[in-house]
Length: 155
Image 1: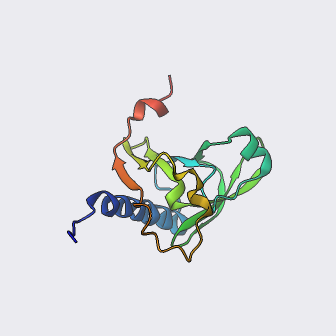
Image 2: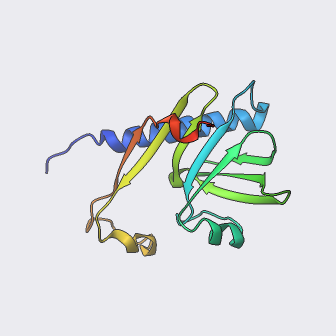
């Protein structure tokens, strides 16, 4: 069997690690200077925990801003949790790093976009058990890219 290096998945993991490192520093030391983050994530990803009213308002994707008011930023190996303010209502969120689609720090014009490419028939992948050997379907590939900041600019 031919073996190859899966650079796409390696890059994906490295960029998620970068986000984890940045958030871990912010959790410990606070946001430095004008830094702030726009984080877009897949609200349907396994492990995402958000209030029902947020889930109904953002059924597939949600962008949160970590800037002026946040509490309880806790970084774990595979996810982070944070409490953010939505219309003067604090709401806890749990976001797995694999659910993150974009991470942008507009203060320094830095951004990453993660795209997942999987088979069209992989909609049931959330139902796979831990006992599955995974040999039937190839794993999805992940690409990390620099995201255009125009989406987040104030006009």
